[in-house]
Amino acid sequence: MADNPYESDKLVSEYLLFHYGSAAEILPPDAPAGMADALDFAVRTPGHFTGTGGRALDLGCAVGRSAYEMARGSDEVVGIDFSHAFVAAATALATGPVAYTRLDEAHRTTPLEARLPGDIPAERVRFEQGDAMNLRDDLGVFERVHAANLLCRLPEPERLLHRLPGLLVSGGELVLATPCTWLGEFTPPENWPDGPTLDWLGRHLEADFELLGARDEPFLIRETARKFQWTASQLSHWRRR
Image (cartoon, rainbow, N blue to C red):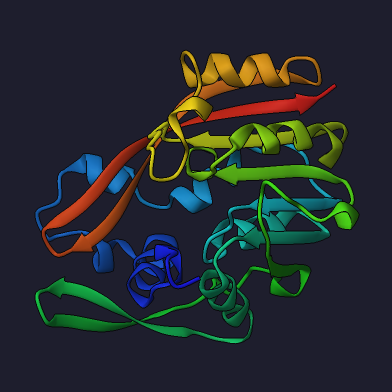
């Protein structure tokens, strides 16, 4: 766990700001329009689902915002992340605000609190630590599965792709989003797609899923007052045959 950057206080704070921060807390005063358009990524991606009711699964849930958003239209939501620290923060939000620190510059920081919107039925959501490549056998099946910015962080992403058909009921929906930033530090090059990522997904999923649509969804992560990650994640929406 010590070698996993997603267990650090720094990354937990960055992701709490990414998932729950307001525009005023994230953006500089003179932010161009494109930065504002990239906010609320963890709210926008589950918004692509069309169905309601039943069970939902959020893989790579980080600090939980997408899982909580999925609870608006689901009877039960399971959020799974590899990071124990992310799971602890996501779980704590169900019972009240979570304090964290925003890094501004050098030693300058700002104390902030992450909190859930008041209309989210948090009692429908539970979180657990787990490995998306080795999901427990008794997880069950779901009406909706969401995995955002996860695939290109897995050492063997095809192991998850092979498991996906068994996680969804017939007619169930799958939303995948990936910035396609394939890096050797996370995924050995021999396990990268051998062509465009969307084509690679199609080859693995087309026997069991129908592609409903694909588009880019931008996201913005604030590192300091003057340093931001702006990235376009390729979102694809599928239906289980």
